[in-house]
Image (cartoon, rainbow, N blue to C red):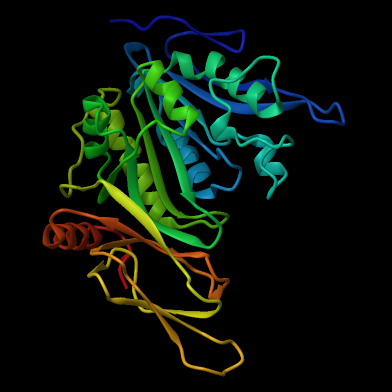
Length: 339
C-alpha cells in the first residue's frame, strides 16, 4: 500500500522523499534564531513512523554518530513507513556545553512542554507537538555522564509488552526496567502510547566506536522488527533483564585504582577498587560491592571526592547466566568491551 503525505514544520513530505528540515526553536538573548536539524526519510510504501533522536543534554556524541550513520545508510525506496532522525535535539545544550539550558530547569522535567513556559518547556512543547506525536515508535540515544563509561544497555518499561519486545530485538546485552515516574519524557510517551527505548553506552563528550556500532546495529534491528526494513532482525544473544541498578559511592577521597571492568560479574564483598591518599600517606581504602551483580558503569576519572559515584552495579536473578550472556555477546563484537 502506498504511503500518505506527511506534514512536519509546515512542510509537506511526499512518499519517496528524503528531506532536511529545520524546526524553529526559542530565540536566544541575542535574538539569533535557533533551529533543530531534522532528517525525514519517507518511504513510498505505507508503514510505521520511527523517531530516533540524540543529544538530549547536549553532550551525547555517540548518539550523534549513530543517527548520522542511520541517515547515511537508509534510503526512502528501501523502507516501508517513515524515519524521523534528529542527531541533536538540544541544540542549545550542544553549543553552550556544559550548560544544558538557559533556564534553571532540566529538559527531562519539561515534557510535554508549555507553549508560554520557560525555554526548556517551550522546546519540549515544540518537539512534542511537531515531532513526537507523529511517531509510532521512539528510540532515544544516550551516553553516560562525563567520565562515566557505561556498558551498552537498553532501558524500557517492562510493563509495556510492545516496548519489551523491541528491547529484546535491539540486541544489547542488558535490558533494565525503568518506570515513568520522575521522567516527564517517559510519562509523555506513555500517555501517547508510543513505545520508547533508551539506549545508553559509553561516556559523554567522547566517541566510542564499540558503543556506536552496537547502537547502529540495534536501531537497524528495531527497524527490521517493525517491518520498516524487509530483513529479519539479527539476534546474536538472548539479553539478560535487570530490575535494579545502583551506584556504589566513594566513602573517602583520594586516588582511585580500579580492580574491575565493564561487564564483570562480582559478588557481595568483592573489592571493586582502592582509594589512596594522593600524597602517599596512609593505607589504601578498599571499595567493596554491597551486593552480587554485574558492573555496568565505571567512573573513569581517578580523582575521587568522598560521595562521588564510582561503580554502577546491576542486579540479576541468575548471575551465572548473566556472566555467560555478556561473555557470548562480547565475543561477537568487533572490539572487546571486557578487559
